[in-house]
Length: 351
Image (cartoon, rainbow, N blue to C red; front, side, top):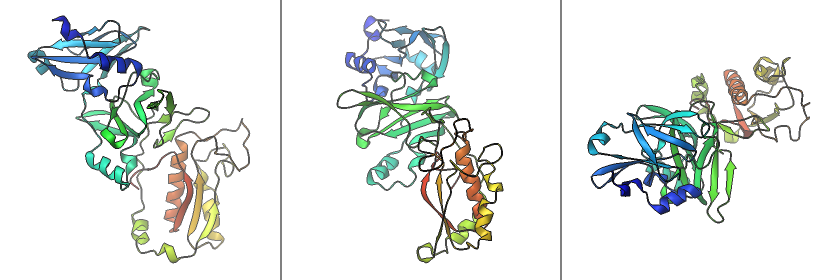
């Protein structure tokens, strides 16, 4: 093919190399050009690459950009979401579906409600949500970073390299998104953010993460609960309860320093006398339960310090402890409120 087709806009390439491109979808993926199609893949740590079907991607002057020129017939045979295979400098071979073949996944209505401050289910939009797009399983990442010049998803899957998976900016909403095929439950990730003002790059945990690594590690974790709630009767009774004009008793539980089983685990707390003691003490009015279950450095703040040799709750254990204890309280027909609730999961199951 003619040499001009093996070039890309200098500005786009420079922005990708510097990690400052706010919309990589305008250059990456498959795009029409005259009577041909240009497929571009951004693989800054690759030595060679190809598309499915054996189509070779040509390196562009060792810039990290790989390009293939397709005829109309070749483009017709190429799937809408095609595989890219490449060899790393270390010799490792990778094969994934290109994330830059997908349309925007965060809807305009969601962006509108978010801008109004009227979106009541942001945890279904922001953060890391397992999705199936066009029959392909993966994770939709989205974060609000209105002062960022570029945001990337980093993790074990790309060597924590912020140049590898830059996200798409959704206009002036401040929301950045990227659907990454193949990512799954329990994968670790963070967001790398390049600031708009001085180009400084920082890695940040996801504020909408449903699970976190155990300290001192700080990565967010892709997590989805399949817990089956059994609280239909309780929800029906709650509709008729006038909680604003009822008395309330306070009961604080700090699981970071109290009420473990013989194995120093929280998982069997619902089998302990904790909840039952509330009933036996005659606390029949609504109760307010304070939980601090997030795996954060502050978990033991203001409480008895635990010996470092004592096992700590695992990252995914804490949200389920909350759900199990909550279900137990509901099953006893107790009306309760949560105060100061710090959880690694903003939503468990369907409630």
